[in-house]
Amino acid sequence: MYLIVGLGNPESDYSKTRHNMGFNVINKLSEKYDIEVNKSKFKGLVGNGLINGEKVILLKPQTFMNLSGESVVEVMNFYKISEEELIVIYDDIDINPGSIRIRKNGSAGTHNGMKSIISCIGTENFCRVRVGIGKPKEHVDMITHVIGHISDDELKSLNEGVEIAVDAISEIVKNNIDSAMNKFNKKKDV
Image (cartoon, rainbow, N blue to C red):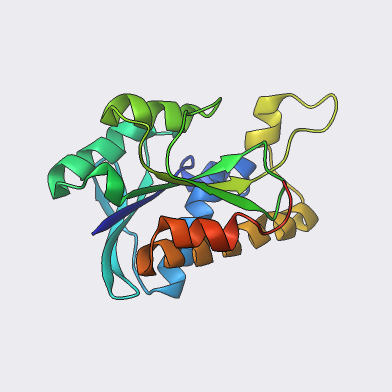
């Protein structure tokens, strides 16, 4: 069983922001595989279903980004999920919009949601799918860049990355992370 976590902030205020790429991927997975993510449990919104015949739990923590780990660790403990079965999807400023990168492990970098998860579960050894949002333009501060609203034109580019991430997660679940890294990490330069 895989726990697939998308990072974001509660959607009513933040749905059209760069910081919600993880939620956007979960929404697309939910739609594609007919998994309703609507049960309020474990400090998040949760849905259970199948992707390529494999049982999965989709999770959108509702704790706000900086406390995402609280929700993730509750689900992992309840379902006895190991770090090998955890996939976390989040936005990354070091990757261009429309691109993704998959990693097996690593530090949180500057991402507070990832810092929270690593702190709560006690390891950096889990799969992450980073969806590119690009760096802020000159004279735009980081907070405005990640949680400020975005134009429809830019949203189209960001959504290309969301679609690629959905395909990559399907590949991870169907085959494995190495297969997904070989297929998707060479798509579009970062």
